Image (cartoon, rainbow over all chains, first blue to last red; front, side):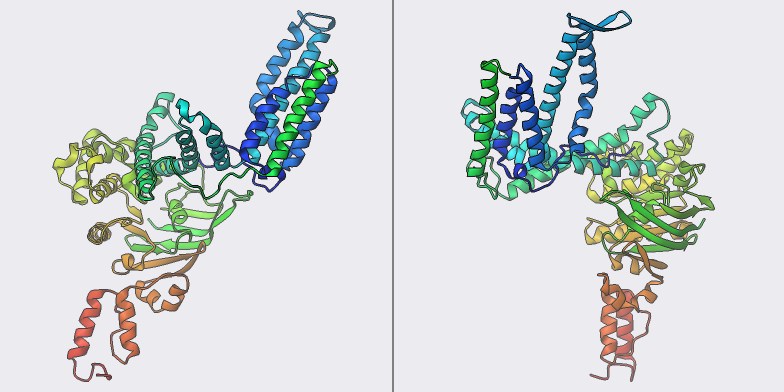
Length: 269
Length: 289
């Protein structure tokens, strides 16, 4: 049993156009595309959505296998919804499986929901694959800032996210070391009844808990020693700069949304 | 109960971009009852090496034998090995968890399934050995000073009454007095029949007390020998970023100026005695004076 290799997020380092885009544009893009993906009503719309998503994947130069790995968690969900849609939608019978009848309408619905979900997950994966956690939180903080007057603690939220991401590997390492130390004193984590195993974690969790508080304390001291006093008046080493390229990307995204909206309103897609 | 390494190599995360060869072809025999120092720069494989001695890590290739038991063999009872080979990690006080000092120190003996009377006897003896008063047994280990907490953690391993005690940087983060206290304490263990293996990046920690010193560099055994033997190869040690004790440097420099000093100066006390003798002895002093 080991906590080594625990990672969160799935940033794929690179230097593609997508990587270099302002994170705010990318977050906005995901929101726009999430709406756009649900607009089509006929095949030209779906085709456009699929092609545009593939175009984005190509732009990000991310290995397809990483995107597919992102599908794994939703696979079961996809299969179950597909089965329900296929057999429970009323319409022309297609074939029978025991007491269940698959329908043509059901098959179409399966195609539609699967396409939508796969596209949605692909677009969301592209965001985390091409944006480092730091830039992602920077972007979120900047986007939430207008909401500060109504009490949204934008800076604090972003800081919490950054710290949490930063300390996951550290705590995993610490847990690993403590487990080894207790094993050296004869502890065993993989034998005995369920209760015994749960109890055997106490000698790991207590020191881990103590260590987290100690680290939090040290971090707070270190931050204060460097003059940290919240987000007010803070300057940054890496300012987010909205370039012409970012503007162009936003125009393309809005243009795509308009295209799908147009197709739908004219009844063509 | 010698500890024998036969051509041991260890690779972390093999076959990934993070592959790291931590040990390369290490062969060494540590005999019973000796005090060994293991030194080497950061990342030289010291910690990986000692974790092979009680089966926390298994060699990627080669064999580790403790008391004739092959640790790579799946049939070997690792619990038994860990009772004989005690390992005190770096900053061991960070692994304390018991509600009382007694509970914490008793963790190891209880895992050995000893009867309560024997557990109690061992805990009290371990506390006494590390110099903690018996009245402290019911106090929480979390309110102690750094040095005291480290002693409790050390007692937790001693209470298992291992025949080999391995300590990874036991003086890290302690003040000079705390360092000396811990080293003096550890120095008494070989006389009790224990093999002591002390890991450090500082030659000064091991020079005075160790029978033999193993120098690790780049995952390989760089040198093995008595402290005096190693210090005569000062250039090689300094080439890999390890210093020699100040007394050795002083003696070398005095010799270079023509002082006639005995060749076995390792500690400050020996240097003082030798210099005094050299100054008194007629014709033995410095020619330059």
